[in-house]
Image (cartoon, rainbow, N blue to C red):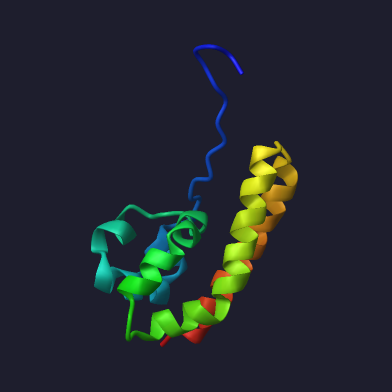
Amino acid sequence: MSKYMQLTVTVRPYYKKDLKGTYPKLARNLGFIDPGFVNRDPSLYEIVGQLDQLLYRLDGTQLREVLLRHGEKLRNQYKIIQENIADWHLAQADKLLYSIEDVFDEIESELD
C-alpha cells in the first residue's frame, strides 16, 4: 500500500429507478422506522451490513419476521463478499451480490 494513498472497493446501489421503485414493499416497511435511510437509496449490501440494527428496530413487524428467516443466509453471503473484496476477488464478490439480490426478491415477494 502506498504511504499516502490506498485503493478501495465500494459497493454502491444501481437501481433502474430507486429502492422504492425496485423493492416497494421493502422500502415502505423500512420507511416506517427510518424514512431518511430509504431516501438515501442504500444498496442491498449496505442493508445487509446493518441487518442486526434493523432487526432490533423492526421488533414486532412483519419485515422483521421475514428478515429473520433469511438473516443467516444474508449474513453468510455478506461475510463471504467482504472476504472476496479484501482478497481482490471482485468477480466472485460480484456473483455473490447477485445472490443477495435473489434473496431480496424473495423477501419482497413475502411482504404484504
